[in-house]
Length: 366
Image (cartoon, rainbow, N blue to C red; front, side, top):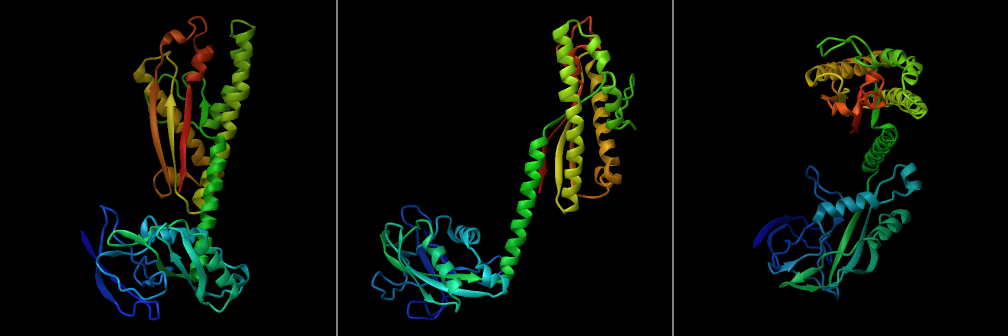
């Protein structure tokens, strides 16, 4: 199968001296030859092949439909990604905001390796030339040229463009990626977050799915009942387990929620979009329908806290008045086998206490 490609070529002893439309063959079902040029179109790669075609002796070769050219695995986009990722802009020239272009020549051998690598057109700056030479020398093995489906050596040239405006954009992207990575790392340390509730809170004995209560107030009331929960435990081991639950899980969840809220605000202020899941659960001491409504109220109480935090910054985002925050609510009202709850302890049973919770997870920043 043949395909047609339009190529722009540079003048020179080893450079094609015309713009032409040519067909390039595929071998054994493989990829067609990739043709590279700096180009001016939208999204065009500004660095890459200069489309030099010469045999291993440096003699000019005219491409035919039976020939493919050397190329990166993955084509032009893969080459552009490699150069963008690995090019190191010389610090001295970067500080002076100097741009330049270096052309490096190499023999792409039939075994996919590059040899005889050298600068054939200097940028006028040794630092650029040295970096271009280092970069091309670091290239991975390439798909070699073929002639009638037989691999062959072919001399090619690579145009390495050092553009200070592109470097500024790359720096900005790297800074943004570093900021995102930092936020991911911080959020990763504290999520998933589990928050616990006293029995039937907030707003007992109702089927409403909304509440004006906010989590931190509910937390304060719940933590003050620690001794009551401990005293209701049946033995020393149970008392110790309940005390540990309050100290480690109830108190710890509150601190993580506070920190997460600050990180979400920071991300949105930086122009990022944040999303997360928030799921509500309940103990098996009530029926499934009631527990689903109760779970929805617990979710709302957490969001009410987030709306009020830091001067109410998140309120318009949570209410949907501003974009930048997506919240996926899941008031599942999980009901477990009631045999898990000790009938004599009821609401004070540790298993039941652990079921009364909110879980925040899958926090994403983009």
